[in-house]
Image 1 (cartoon, rainbow, N blue to C red):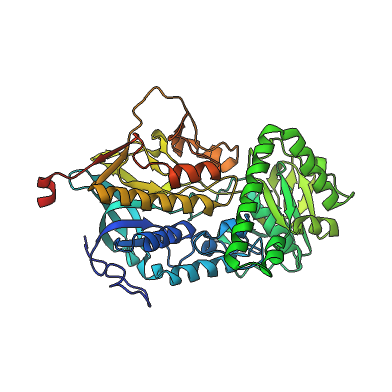
Image 2 (cartoon, helix red, strand yellow):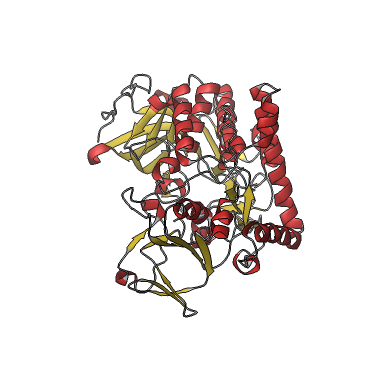
Length: 509
């Protein structure tokens, strides 16, 4: 097994990326939104830290490079989806995928972290040894070559879903359909849909993005949903940014817009929890006004669950509603009985004809890039651990992982987590600690599901998720204000973290 990194991509600065040495202070897994952000935090706050980013794919960007379906865009406002340390400098509140990918690449270049990335390096397993306070990572490199990296601290930023394939429920008769069946996660750039009849199965963020984009040139697009989703229109331009941007400095304008959006999100989420019926009625009223009298919003946009039991979908400038109102798209709510040669037959007996069927049926949840984890010879099943401050896991030393908010921008949480990891490493350095392990201590503490969502991808993988305790710091907040206090200002040594120094014999070895 090679101990030295041999593979390089054109433009890599290997010396600045740690040279040929395979041992680092910190290894980051994943070069998407979270990984690039984590690396920038290290550069800004811990410039002497030796680190590298291991990226399984051959490009930067994660989600924003993987997904190429028509119309791909953010489902959160860019004032909060962009990094706090490098504000999004466009008035667009909702941005398209290529613009977000460009923003990520520019951020990586500005902070020099693009030179730290090892592309085509998939981490297979990670093993911790307390004797030397090191993680050892077994990695498959380009061409299937084996590599080994070691580090003191492991930072997992590989997202939350399986990149190889999306979720496909499977329906009877799929092999009979004469047209094309495509999942958005495996979109073919050569797929022509102009003048075609298209069915999009699904009603989540991907479906509501695809439908108005495809409706521009398709003959007809049908949104087929088993059950409705809450869908809310919002302006694609940030009016506050336009108004203040002419009078105030850019940094102040951004701060005002960012905190306005954070405050509004927190307010609406809490209102949804306190008065779900009123929020439901309000959303339904807005949807009916947006689609016009020709479509029954109570039938097609009135979910079985309460607001924010699943994520609410945003549509910029109401583009989905406009497509439905114009007749270029339509919505059908019903269960699929079978695929046919020409389309679908529903349980109700209704048939839908199509040339292309898009299965926008969701994701397969996969934590930590699917990496096998072992601590001192014992395999770790993440589903049996308890999460600590949304960052670490009980009895797993020197390991942090990013999982963003389900009710707000992912980056709000990933920024806080990366900042906390820098604080933790500073604390350990000042006191000479080599090991930090969350210890739950009170085995009798009540435990609850980590993510309070009824979404299919969460329910299908709930046994894979860590647990959360009934009280802090073993809670996974869905509240930015509480997390700012917990991760940015609360003491590092809170009694739940066990710190250790390496003994002299270990250091001599």
